[in-house]
Length: 189
Image 1 (cartoon, helix red, strand yellow):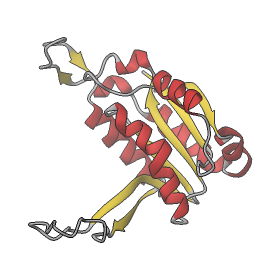
Image 2 (cartoon, helix red, strand yellow; image 1 turned 135 degrees about the horizontal axis):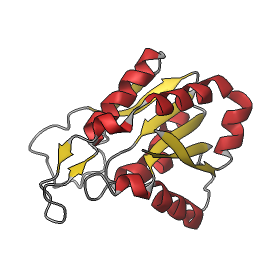
Image 3 (cartoon, helix red, strand yellow; image 1 turned 45 degrees about the vertical axis):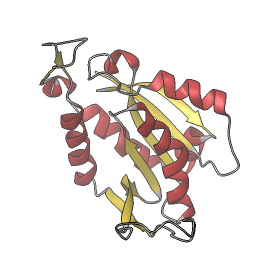
């Protein structure tokens, strides 16, 4: 695969190049080592594109997981204790709220990485909420999000997020006080 798009959100590119060159080089190596042709294995059952052979998001994610783990990047997981004091007094839940988790795909030396070959809402959540949460929890200082370019996403299941829409949203959203530097990398086959 290749890196075909680069977007620096809140000076993400500059921050990562200045302080995390080794980690950035590893991310580049992991991306370029992934042979996308191996992962064009899914036969579509979707109405708009029945029978078409697509890239498998699951297989791509698995390849990235292997590449990151081989270089000692690890997922970071935090427990969520959901508050109950905001229920209205007359509401009693049928089941006590179980504890849940939030996790970021890969972390190394305070760099967080999310690989997103899934639905659009997850891409935005990763860059605009999850990375900020993990920064506030003192796990990461900067983030990198890897997403497909539209031309690559067009050969995946319908509804897969892509680089161009993410960049458009970020540029029209603007930067908030809580945002951290994030480098968005658009990949292609």
